[in-house]
Length: 529
Image 1 (cartoon, rainbow, N blue to C red):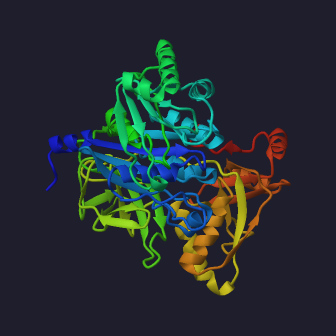
Image 2: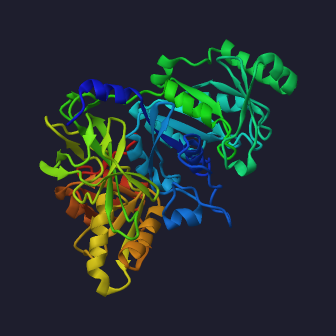
Image 3: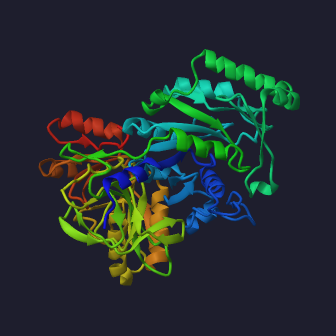
C-alpha cells in the first residue's frame, strides 16, 4: 500500500539529488569515491586509475573506461548522510559524451562544478555550466586538486565571475597556497579546520578544529593571508545568500583535494544544507505534477551490457512524484501500455541491489526495460507526460559495417539496441541500405564505444569509415530530392522518422541556401540552446 502524501513529503525533504560536472581529468571519479568513502559506503578509496598497478575507481566498469582512465557511462549512487538521502548521478567525463551528461542534468536538482585548481575554467565545464543555467539548476563550485601547484584563490574566483557571470561565494577559504594545502577557514564561523594526510588518501582525512587565535599561532602568515582575503570577499558582498544561489546568480565555493579527501565533508554538508530538495515537474499539458501526487517518473538513460553474464538492458528513471514500490504496474505514457516494475535495482558501476521503495529524487534502474527510451514517462493514476529530452546536434558521421556477412542478424539487433539507448543516432537511406547504416554522434569517441560494445556484447567485429560531413540539417520530403542532387550533400532518415541532410561544411550549406532559398534546411536544436 502506498504511503500517505505526508510520508512522501517527509521523504522528499531529506533528499538531495545532484550531478558532478567537469572537464576531463578534473578529478570527478575520484571525488565520487571520496564522497562514498565519507558516507561509509566503501572502506577504502581506489587510487586514481589509468596508472600501472593501481585500481580503477568503483564507478567505472566498462573496459574502455578502465583502460583509458575516463568515465564514458553514467552511474547512480545513493547513500545516507546524517539522516539525509543523497543521490549522486555520475556523468561521463569526456566531451564526446556531453549528450549523455545533458540527459543526466535533466534528472538532478543541483550540480557540483568541479574545477582544476591549476587549469581553471575549461571548455567542457563551460558547456555543461550553460546547460545548468538553461535548466535553472543551481551550482556549487569545488576547486579541486588544491594539494597541487595551481592558481591563487582570488584569481580563480575572478575568472568564474568574469567568464560566466556566476558570482562565487566561498563557504570555506584555503589556508596555504595551492600545492601546500593545510586546511580551510570556515568563513561562517571564523574557525580553522586543519586536515591531516592519510596514506595514499585511501581513508578519511582526520580534521582538527581550532579557533582563530590558535589558528594564527599554528599557521602564522598563511592564516593571516586567508583571513585578509576572506574579509576582502565579504566587503565585495561575496558571502553566501541562499536566495541568490537558488536563483542561479551565485555559487557556494569549496576548496578541496578529492585525492587526499580534504574538503569532502564540507561539500557533503553544503549539499545537505544548501541544495534544494526535489520539486514537482510540469507536463507537456503545462499541468504540474507535485511531488506528493501519485507516482510518475522520467527515463533519462538506457544502458545495456553492464553485466557480461546477463545481456540485460537497464533503464534509469528519476522519480518525479509519489512513492515507487517494486512490482507496481505503471503506464508507459508514450505507448499507453502497462509496464511491470518487478526488477527494480539501484546500480553503481557493476554493483547492484534490489530497490523495494523509492521517492521523488531517487534514481531507480528497471531491468530488461526493452520498450523504454530516454525521455519516456511512466505514471500511475492520472495521465502525465513530461517533455522529451532534446538531442544535441551531431557533428561527426561514419558508416558502420560488419566484417562478416554471416553476422548480419546480430549486427541488426545490436544496432537497434544501441540506437534505442541513444548511444548514437542511426541514419539510413536506400542507397547505403541496412547493412551500412550511418552513425551520427556529438564526438568521435562514441564510435569507439559502438565498435567495442558490438564486439563484447554481440560478438560482431565492425569497422568504421568516417564520412566527409560536418553538420546536419533537418529537412522534409519535398526538399529531399533536390538536396540529394547537390554536391556535398546526402539525405538520410533517422530512426524517429526525421529526415536529415548531411552537408560537407558551412560554406556548402551557405551556397545551397543562397541558390535554393525555398528548400527546408533547419538547424537541429542543441540541448543547451
